Image (tube, rainbow, N blue to C red):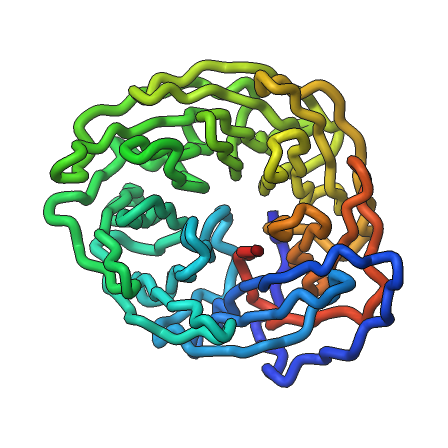
Length: 365
């Protein structure tokens, strides 16, 4: 988890020097990496183009028209892409709003709108089909909540009446995500629960919930695959990743757990074949890789890369072809690109990509 921020923003004419050409990197990586400035003076969405060798170059910046907080949000999913890669959603935790952007056919993007929330301090977003839900970490007396919107084909959001769901106490949530069309899952650090919420298919309002105590304490970020398996980082102690199965009715069951002997495992990503899970270990300045069996069992773990002291990795994300992994290094204010080589990671030979000191969240495709 990020423990140090430089509140003053680095000017947005970032140091973006050309990277050396890697002749072996012929995978023709395509796509973009997104983060947000999270600035208290005005939040911005930052878009970087993935070059053929896996390096990044700044493509554009665009105001969200909302405000950031200038500090760590302690969450996963504060910036997300829609499943069809047509929209980007960004929280504005400083003024309790959500911004949506459309990705144009040219690769450029445009603000669709900013939407005020009932909850306080939005930290994580879930999207599936025509539904978008936002998790807020604070409210009256510290109570957390989530609320829903419908999503139009043009990216416009509309509030779902009576969709706000308040947690019974301060569960200190870290992430919300869809697992099925009508099942949401939230990780709760204060209770050590994963809780699923069934949504009525007509009203999209939560009608029931189920919880499971996690294998280890402090569940944080998680990654979801297409068959209901989720892979959750658990940050306490030596840190671990655990896998769980979510049924279409929302029932949760444990599959496996594996320690990575690191510290501060908080963010998770899986490849497109669900054979490798990566955890970002902020306390150890490392990224771990876990092998996954076809039934979701975590079988082996290793330190995929040691970033060195002073990098404090936060959010991570894989390119759509699984050839490159991108890391938001919080303490050093960079996005670090790595080439995926089996279960190991190799730094891409390029100059660093600097981001604003309060930058948070990462979405990659």
